[in-house]
Image (cartoon, rainbow, N blue to C red; front, side):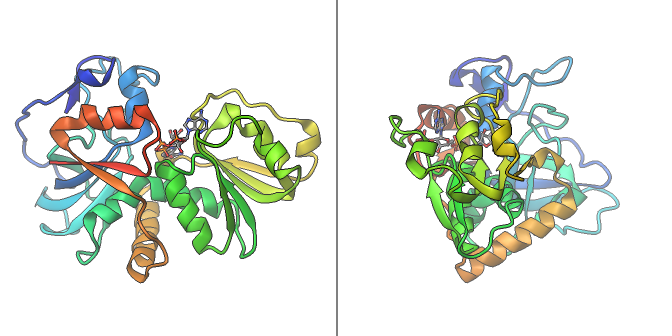
Amino acid sequence: MQLNGYGGPEVLELREVRLGAVPEGEVRIATIAAPVNRADVEIRRGHWPVQRADPFPYTPGLEVLGEVVQTGPGVHWPPVGQRVITMMQRLGGVHGERPGCYATHVTVRAESVAAVPAELDPYAVAAVGLAGVTAYEGLRRLEIRPGHTVVVHGASGGVGSVAVRMAEAMGAEVIGTSSRSPAERSLLDELGPRSVDGVLETLGERTFADSVAVLRRGGRLCLVGALTGPELGLSAWDLIQELVLTGYSTENLTGDDLREDIAMICGWLRDGTLTPPPYQVVPLAEAARAHRLLEAGGHSGRVLLVP
Ligand SMILES: NC(=O)c1ccc[n+]([C@@H]2O[C@H](COP(=O)([O-])OP(=O)(O)OC[C@H]3O[C@@H](n4cnc5c(N)ncnc54)[C@H](OP(=O)(O)O)[C@@H]3O)[C@@H](O)[C@H]2O)c1
């Protein structure tokens, strides 16, 4: 699926592209599932323009789970037949240095993939995917301990729905918000000041000031998204409470980080510590419909494109 310009979901076009030889050090993955991310929608709309002099044609998609079908010269691992997952690392995204994952085949550097055990349901692993890595890395930065109270914003979305499950598995009491949360009372009204230990912030502008105000002294906030805008308000009287405000982006993910996080996530899925979020499967050729689902809001969990 390619974009030849920014616009509505209809600008996603199905194209046949001839596959070349696999370059040295790279592997070709046959797609089993390519999850849709909010960033794909923002890029398609032109809100987050592709940072290339000549952005089109552009293949969206930040992540793919599939099977290695070909390896280039010099690749020792993964072998053909290995089930793998890969994400970001300049695949699609605003850098778009490589064609993204809305495709039947995706070619990446061998060191940028992580193994996925064959006995796990590939759709379940893909549904956790990039959202799960983001949630896990964000929650790690909150230093959650059993009994902590944690706010997860956007709890019905891709990142939020996985984060709720993970934070509960870490022993936290979780308070989730979504656009369906009552608008008449703010988070601060609802919870009161200095009432929670951590906040996973996905919304940014609309919620940030309250997110900071509800943190207990020494509490931690990790911002992984700013869905409602980038301008953040902050009171000095909050910061003086020795709060830790940080952030995380999978833009900085390395192959080693990915393998560590995916091994952890797959272990949790295998032993039932983590259940996958709800997901919908949509044919790759109907990527426009998948984007409409995300844009309409109100869906739960993740949308997976399958060839
Ligand atoms: N740091 C990273 O590496 C990384 C990786 C992945 C995603 N992200 C970012 O994380 C954010 C969430 O991504 P996602 O994939 O989880 O998105 P998503 O699946 O579309 O979910 C968005 C969530 O936010 C809620 N929401 C949307 N607009 C809202 C508003 N105005 N007020 C309150 N809640 C609102 C939605 O609630 P409803 O369902 O009720 O509408 C939903 O729960 C995005 O900003 C994305 O770019 C960052």
